[in-house]
Image (cartoon, rainbow, N blue to C red; front, side, top):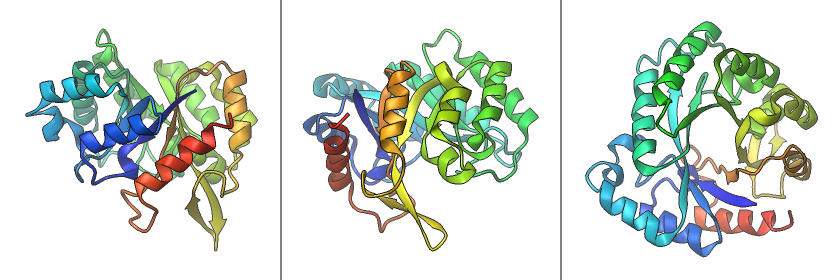
Length: 260
């Protein structure tokens, strides 16, 4: 099992601290979302001014970058630079030998509108740009696609692959894990894991094993489905400063996942 964590859980850390913590805790990969409180990777100093030094550091530590996570919302007419951002991330992923970037329909974890046809048009453009670069843009199960039956239809029409954020369809669409697996199957190329409960009608994030997400069913279903990619922990501290610090939760996640 390949463990990974998103830097959304440690938004103010340096890249060196991120990589060494991952190595010390037994992670194989990291997902880049925030470094030193910056969130647009193509403009981060580590990947712009210091790219060659960064490549050398990654090689030395021996932890891979599993994904670069964009905020490109391809179904949102207000995100006028969505395709431009996605293309910039593809170029960076090619430089860093990163296999995946994340794109979205909308920037909400639940259904909140969005233009399906616009999303299809722009995703096709992004996929075409990625051809021959060794990078696959993955569509996340949020926004329009908390309904994974709709995401299956979308990917059948466009190509590409799915990033299964296991939390969103379950919490915001009451979707059974078995239905998600049946809908997406081999289209699942990458996975986000988190745990939570509903408190006073709202989602409250918890350390792994302290919520009521069906984590055992998720992992076992993925294994039975032949999934051999990263199991990436997403701790949304970037937007919720009251959540526990990254060092605590990353260790908890690594220890919890050992049972599988």
